[in-house]
Image 1 (cartoon, one colour):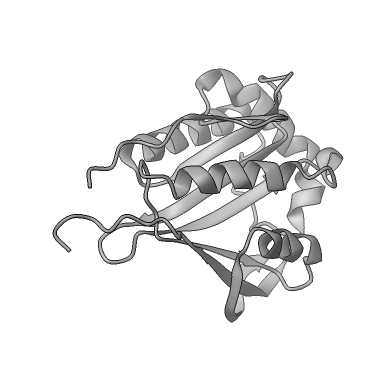
Image 2 (tube, helix red, strand yellow; image 1 turned 45 degrees about the vertical axis):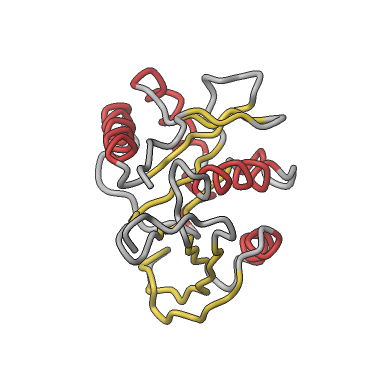
Length: 195
């Protein structure tokens, strides 16, 4: 099976998920600055200069390059009525092919947009694309801190199954933190020709 690129734009009833463009650098910076304290508890430390438009523009370019090469798929989430405002992100990184056909899922949503079911809506669309014949991943893995009950419940609702606890998985918020690992398999995976 020949894989074609993932769609760069996904639509849901309330959201627009877009792979991005240079014009979103200011909106991405605003998103990161607004949520700096909110994300600090759950995300690895940011590098120096992270909170600048230049660094955010480079992040957009790097993500688009990975997207085009099939090495990673990141969509920035906007309200459907405000496509130039970023309120979240969904990211499939560490895309592996061969006998694995797997990726690692990451996601984040603006503190002011939590609790509305929007991340669930975005992830349903993004997972459908990841498991589509275009991308054809067999497996998506996610990791969350056990105390992040909201994230754990979201992944469970999406059908992710626990696969184990990884001690000292990531350095976050000043210390190495344990993470619960979970995975979702593609029930419609198309075995590549020649296997």
